[in-house]
Structures are given as C-alpha cells and as structure tokens.
Amino acid sequence: MSERNKFPYQMIEEALDELITCAKFSVFYDKKFGNKLGRVVTGNLGYPSAIILFSIIDIIGNCFKDKKDLEMIVDGKNVRVISKKDESSFFILNSKYFNQNLTNEEIKYLYNRFRSKLIHNGLIGAEAKMFPTSTKHKTAFFSTTSEGKGRYSVSLEELFYLCEKAINMFKIDLKEVVESSRLGKKFP
Image 1: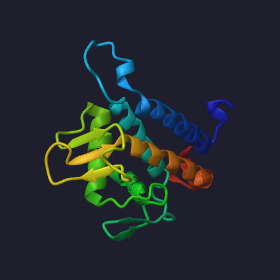
Image 2: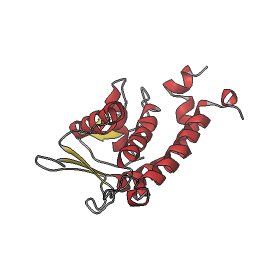
Image 3: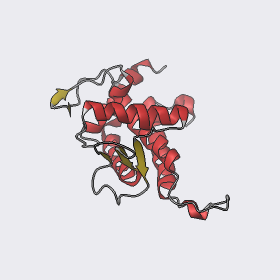
C-alpha cells in the first residue's frame, strides 16, 4: 500500500514499529564493538536511543491532544486533556500506557531536556544523566536526586521496555484513538 493510500493510524503504527526496532538496536548496541576511534569507549548509543524513545512518547501523547477520554494523574490531580502546550504530550507517561507517577515539574524537565534540547541541540544539561542499563533504576526509568550531575537520571534500558509495552498496549486502541483525534481529523 502506498503512503498516499494509508490511513493516519496505519502510518503511526508503522512509525512506532520502526522506531522501537531502531531503539532496540541502539539501546542494546555495545560501543566497544564499533569503536573506530582507538580509545576506550563503553556504553550504548545513548543519544540516538533517547531521541527515538522520547519521540515514541511524543507520538503517543500527541494522538491524545484535545481528547477527553484518557485519564492521567499529575500532581495528584486528574488530567483528562493533553493540551496544545508542547510538553503536555508527555502527560501520557502518567496514563495506562506508561503507568508512571511523575510530577508536572518532572514531565516538563523530561520534555525540555531529554526531548527538546537533545533533539535540537545535542545536549541534555549539566544536571541530567543517562544510564545505558537498568543497574541504577530497578523498575523506574526516571529518578531525581537532590542536586548535581545526575540529579535527573534516565535509564535507557528501562525506558525502552516501557515504550515497547506502551506501543503494544496503544496498538489495541490506535485506530479508534487516531481516527477521532485532532491528527486523524486534519489528515487529508
């Protein structure tokens, strides 16, 4: 089927499938096998991994913009609408798809640093740190400490598994959600 004949939900499903496949490669890639620089290099492809995984969150969140049929709790308040504010697409992290319990401040930080600054500037900030594996975080992908480097930490392996699970759950609702969404209604 050509792109022209695909419905928006089919394109979104294909995009999510391709992105999680690329994320799997980059999250579990070991830099020491691709080292051409002649120096000691460890870890995974952290920056591409983060860009891909946070794009997945953004895609799923944007499917719910202006819809009132998904509940999320943010700062102890029931949020039923992901608004037009950019970072609100990350409220989806506190939905049934990702099952997190992040504060509004944490959601904004994730969006602004680990998504926007990383994508547009190749930076995450002095207080931010990414871990290639889940050794730092046992079940959560995001944690905060009091101050300094690593104050805001993301486990890329945990985030990968979280996104993989969210995609599988979202696919069940995808057609209905997208067809009644702002994205689906604006699609030519």
